[in-house]
Amino acid sequence: MSARMKDRYEKEIRPALVEQFGYTTVMQAPKIQKIVVNMGVGEAKTDSKMLDAAGEQLATITGQHPNIRRSKKSIAQFKLREGMAVGVAVTLRGERLYEFLDRLLSVAIPRVRDFRGLNPKSFDGRGNYAIGIKEQIIFPEIDYDAVDNVRGLDVVIATSAETDEEAYALLAAFGMPFAKPAEPKPEPKVEAPAQDDDAAAEEAPVAEAEAPVADDEAPAEAEAEAEAEAEVEEESAEEPATEPEASAEADADEEN
Image (cartoon, rainbow, N blue to C red; front, top):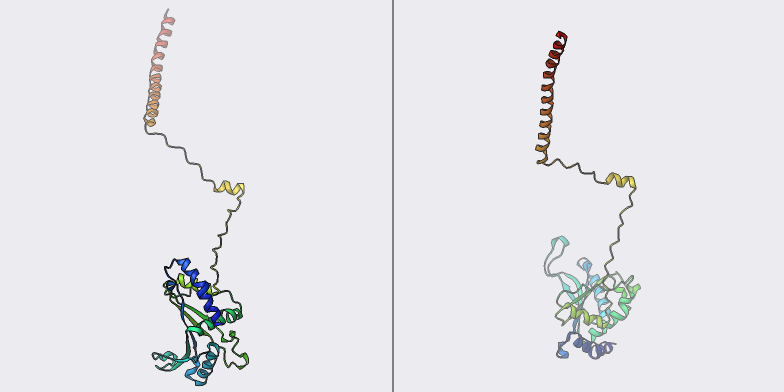
């Protein structure tokens, strides 16, 4: 099984990466350097048997005896002292690396319930990829009836890639089931509600008031009014003068 993955890398994946990224030699093509599998056992601080059970399960999964991971500092909040055992871990290289990778991709991950793909953004910026597995029972080597407790484990794949883009291309070529990025959904078009004629008339802007008379027209109107008043005064002044003349003529006729 391990020979299959290794031969695939040397004959198919590596030449494809050289062509894709324009490397001058095949030695520049990225490769998987190691795989670290870690299983945390928080219950080990109160029950040492939990640590032994986790170590046996991890050895069954990876085919290699695990090392005990101990805390580097004390944390009073978690009742943790420096040097206390907190988990077990295995570092895989060479043939065992390809063997574990083959079983992980071909058997274990397809058994994950409601699997929708691995997160393509779980790279650390230096070409390393991390996978979180919630249940160790997805590996067929684990007997479900003999499991004392369901535990999760972390898988870190360290590559020689200088960028996350190169590491992504490498793992995708091995068949890593990355989730496809979600396509942006188009924004729904909101149509304006239809308005009645009455409502439209109410919302129509009020007509602007008539523009005020220009300043240069005001003096002309004032002059016209003044001339009209002057004519009226002249007429009123002429009318009394005619009455005495008429009375004098009448007296002269009577005397004759």
